[in-house]
Image (cartoon, rainbow over all chains, first blue to last red; front, side, top):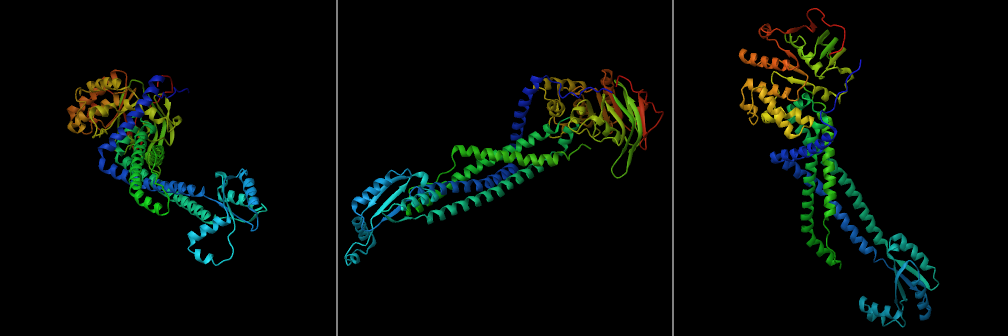
Length: 320
Length: 228
């Protein structure tokens, strides 16, 4: 027996497309209005979301700043080459000329034995003791600054190997241990941030899911009526999905505001601390691009939380 | 319009609600469905609106076998059916206009079209100009008529009414039935479930009677043909 196809809509195709967008905008605005009309509960939820999102974002800011600090220190990595005693000044100059043309080398500076002695006398405070020695015990030093590409611990070590093969060099020294430690600390920090961020993101999804669940329960009768008069699940779930997205958007903006307040509060103290280390850096807050990313991620989380909730609870509601 | 062929319904747990029910409501026909509470009226209505599905037998609604209708298609089938309830299922926090407009909003009509049709539907049930009221401000009879306006606003070929006069006095009940007659005159098929036997007696329409899950009277099913 042939059956007529169930017609999806009485409207023509183009009208359907236009109405699809109009309806989406209407439902998005209606969801916003719904939040506006119940300000107390929605503000509480948004505040919770803002705080939850601000923590991973704050950690992100921390990592970003830590990275920029280590980067500035990394580029200061230098290799000291101690020259064999008894090499003539000419031999040393020819060594310097040779090293300068290495592609890995950015800059070379030279501290002669006499200069080294002078420096030691003024800086160490043992100047008087040195005058008892009958000859200068200090070696000449060639300081090599690697190019950016070779300033990482591995790259610098490689360059050090190469430089140590020069006959004039007695031994070379790369003071890199502290740099490796710093890198280890930063990567530990990054991992911690990822783990904490993952947990907090999960919390955001659960909070939104639960909020939407309550909203669905509150509108149970309305959902039953809509199902009875022929509303599709898509139509019924859309306002809830938009509510979730709005929660995410506003939570994200709140988090951004919290971060900027936090950076503003910490910046003075940090500048003082870094000033003690002779560094001139200030903390970077979130840029506009990062604000967009934060809000984008937050609204996706809002959508995800409400989608999970809607999938679970909307189907369970059937007209009686 | 509605055709049941040897339909049985057993709920999980073994409770038998309908046994071997067959009947045919023709296109443009108006009929009553009656029986004591527990006789299976609600189950029958739930099968027609695909809230429940039959355990055995076939149910045809407006030419569609509901066994062939997937979960996703159910809403589209329900748009062919205007439903009216005893407790009218109005949304009390929305205006009369919003309540009546709901089926049109769901189908995606433009606002202008919605306004035109809602005004028309409210005019038919005698509530023209009350669109801005809240249902709470209306009397029981008026609320029921809002429910009827919502059921007919998208001009469905079939009206199902579940105890539409349950809470109303005889005069108001008669008014509501007259309203159904006007829709029937316009070609809409109407099935009214009621236990108000006095009301049925005063009307000339066919009566389907359920007793303990069975349809009383001769098995009036003719062979399947065109026209349903």
